[in-house]
Picture 1 (tube, chains in turn blue, purple, red, green):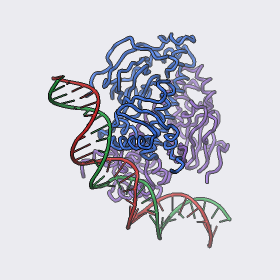
Picture 2 (cartoon, chains in turn blue, brown, yellow, green; picture 1 turned 30 degrees about the horizontal axis):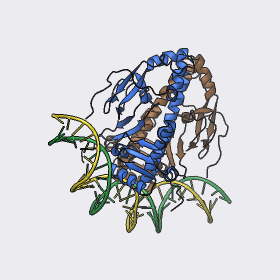
Picture 3 (cartoon, each protein chain N blue to C red; picture 1 turned 90 degrees about the vertical axis):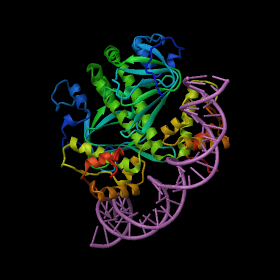
Picture 4 (cartoon, each protein chain N blue to C red; picture 1 turned 135 degrees about the vertical axis):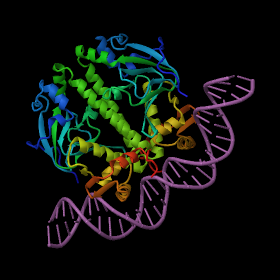
Length: 246
Length: 246
DNA sequence: AAATAATCATGATCTGGATCAACAAATAGA
DNA sequence: TCTATTTGTTGATCCAGATCATGATTATTT
C-alpha cells in the first residue's frame, strides 16, 4: 500500500538537461546558453521511491515538476471510486499544470520506480516571467502539446480496438527509446499490466493475451517486465489498422 | 456535405463580453475595466453557418477564437479515418490552442448552427503580452482548465458505462444552461445523436435507446432536438453510478 | 410541391472484451 | 530463509453495446 510522500533528498544522477522538457525554460531563466545553469528556475531536486506520491488529490498547487530520471503515473478518480490513469511520465517530462486553474490537484501522481524530480515553484516562475519574456510563451507551448496528447488519447479510448490500443501504446514507448538512445530496441516496463490496461481502457487479462499474441506473431518478445521490439513496422500498421490484410 | 469555410462577415448579436472565456484577456488587453473596450485584443468578428469550417486539418495556426454565440464541434482523425469529436463549444468558449505547439491544426472545427466568433491573432496576442503582464498568465489558466476537462473525458471514455456517459454529458449540458440563464431547464441540442455518440464513444443507436429510457424513467423529456430536464438530481446520481439502488 | 437525403427510432442478432476462476511466478516482508 | 502479497498468465463463460435491418420523421434541394 502506498505509502510515503515527497521525501526530501538531494544528489541524483543527472540526465542531460538539454533533453528535459523544461530545458528551454531553464535556459531562458538562467539567461544564458549554458544548460547547467538552471538554478534560476529549479528550486530543489529530490528523489522518490516506488509507491511514493509526488502529489495527492486535494493538495494545494504550488509547484510544477520535471522528471529527471525514472517514471511516474498520474490518475484521476470519479465520485464512485473508478480511477483512470491519465499519463505515464518519463525523463524530461513535466507534471502539474493541470492544477494551475483550480489552484489544487484533482489528481494524484505515484512514482513507479526510484525517480528524481526537479521542483519549480510556480509563483517564482511567474515572478521570473515578468523579467524574462518568452518564459510563459514556452510554458504555453508545453501545455499546448499536452492538450494535443490528451486529444489523441480520447481518440484511442473512444475509437480504437484493444489490439490497436496496445499497438499504439507500444509504438509510443518505442519513440521514447529512440529519443533516449538506450539499447536499440528493448524497454523495461515500469508499470504493471493492470496499469497499462487501466490507461488504455482495458483489463489486465486483455493486455496479457494481446501481448502473448504479438509475441506469437513475431512482433515483439516479452518476458515479464522486459519488452523487445522485433517488428516495429508491423506494430505501426496495427496501431491504426492499415494492416495489408494477412 | 460541408462546405464553405471562414466566410467573412460582420455585425452579429452581442453576447455579454463578461460571460466570455477571454473576458479576462480582453479586459487586461484594453487596460481598463470597461468590458466593451475589447478591440485591443480582438482583430475581427465574423459569422459562420451550419456546416462551415472554422479551421481544417493542416491549416497554419495563426489565430485563437472565442465563440460569441452559437456552437461548434472539434474533432481529430486517425490515420485510418476514424474520427473522434474532442469537444462541443458554446458561447464564451475558446478554441485553437491545441495548435500552438505544432504551429498548425491537427484537428477540424465545424459550426453546428449559425455562429459568431471573435478572432484573436496569436502573434498580436504575444506582442500585447510583452506590454501587459498577466495576459499570458490568463491564457495559461484557460489552458490548464482545458487539460483538466480532457482528463475528465479520458475517465469517461475509459471507465464509464453507456448510461453513466450519457448522464454525465447531460449534466454538463445542464451546467451551461444555468450559466447562460436561458429558459429554466430546457436545452436545444445543436448536435446530432450520432455526434453525441461519437463524442462519448458510443453509437447513435445506443444514444437513442438510453434517451428513450431516461424519458420513460421520468428523468428527462426529449422531443427530437429539444431536451427538458425533469429530475436533475437523479441524472447526477446516474452520472457516477452512486444511485441509491432504486 | 415533390424528390432526395439526413436524422431519429426500435427491434433482432452478434461479438469483443469483461468477468470469473485457478494457478504460476516474482517480489516484498518478517 | 520462509511466508505473504502482488503481479502475470491462460481458459471458460457472459453480457453490454455494436452491428444489421427497417421504417418514420424532418430537412434540404430541385
